[in-house]
Length: 517
Image 1 (cartoon, rainbow, N blue to C red):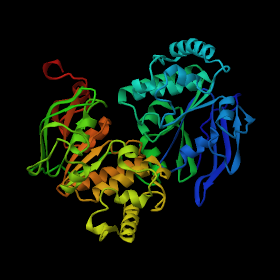
Image 2: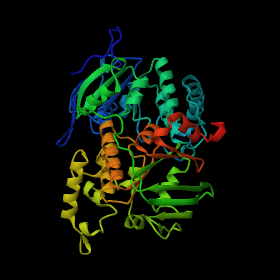
Image 3: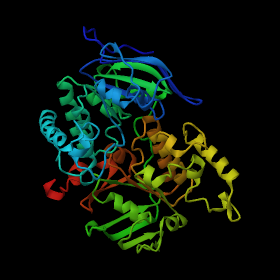
Image 4: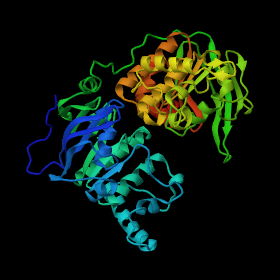
C-alpha cells in the first residue's frame, strides 16, 4: 500500500509520474507506477537491484520511453522523448557510472554539448565565470583546468553535478551516488545536497543504503519487483521497516555469525612491496597472516594500497617480499598469473566486477565458467562441455538468487547487484582455500548484502580463509574476525573486531597510532 508523503501545499509536485509501465520483452521493469515528488525536497527511491528504480528514472530523463503513463513537471504534462527534452524541462541526472571525457578538462566537460555557438572560446569564458559562482554557492569547489583523469571519483561526481546545474537544472536525479565514494566523500556529498535543497532544488536520490535514506531524505518511496509498494515520510519510518518493504520479508541488518575457530595459517605475507609503473611505492613492507576458519578484514580509505594488495595476491601485479599459501611460496615476479593462483586454491572476487570480474559482452553461463572452463567438470576433451556449464549456471543462479535467472542473458544486461552475485557464486563455488574479496557489496541492495555476507561466513565455517577488503566500516566491523588497517601502503595496526569500534579504526585509517590516538 502506498501512502502519500506530500504535505498539503499550494505548489504542485515538482515531479509527478502517473501509471508508468515499461517492459523489456517478457520482463516487466515498471508496472503502473505513480509517484509525487514535492519541490524543494530530497526524495529517496529505494529497492533491491532489479526493482526498476533506474528504469523509472531513465524514463523521466528520456533515455527510455514508457509503454504507458504520463509525466508532469511542475503540474504540467510534459513529453520527454530524449535527454535534451529532459534538460529543457529543468531535469539533470548524475549516473552511477559517470559520463565524462577523461582527457578533457573539467571546464571542457561542463561546456560539452551546451556551447553558446560554434566558437568555443566565448563558451569557455562564460562557463568559467558561472562555474566560479556555482562552486561558491553550493560548496562544489573543483579545479576547472584539471583533466578528469587527474582527479578522484569524488571530484568527478562534483563535475557531473556542476554539469547539471550549468544547464539550469532545478530537478537533480542521482543514481547510487555514493557507490564509488569513500565515507568522507559521501558526507561531503550530503552537505552539497543539503545546500542544493536550501536553494530550492528538488533532488531524487536512488540508493539501496538505508543509512543514507535516513540521514538525508525528507520522503522515501520503496519499489519491489517493478512496482511501487510504499511512499512514506522518512521521519515516520526506520531502517528495519524499509528493509522489509524492499525485500518483502524480515531482513537481518547485522551479520549473524558464531565466533571464529581459527586453524593453521593459510596465507602468510611478509614484507610485501609494490612499486607501480610511475615508480610510486604503493605497498611498503606489508606483513600479516590469515588462518583457516577466519575472516581478516582490511580497512582503510580507498587508495591506500588495498587494491594493489589484492592484485598481487590474485596474480595480477608484480611485487617483492614473501607470500606463502599453506606453506607453499607464491611467485611474485610475474611468471605466475591469475590462472596459476586459481590452480593453487585462491578464489578472487575483484573490486571492480565490470572490468575485472566479468566480460560484459559474454552471457551469464560463459561468465559463470570464466577462469574455470578448463576444469574436468566443464571440459569434454579439448572442448568445453556447454550442457554441463549450462546446468551448473542454472543451479548457481537459483541458489544465489540471480535475477532474472536466464543463463543466456548478457552480463551487461544484469543490474549491478546481480552481476556481483554471478562473480561471488563463481568464486565461492570453486571451493578455494583462500578467498580474496574486494568490496563484496558495492552497489548491492540490502537483500543481496545479507545473502552475500551469509555465503562468506559459511565459507569461513567450512574452514576456509577469507581476506576481505572494504571501504564500508560497518561491513568490516560486522563481518571480520580480525581487522588490519591500511594507510599509505602500510599496516597501521591490527584489532580484534569485537574489541574495537569505528572511532578507533577511523584514527588508524587517518594514520594516527599509539599514544597520539
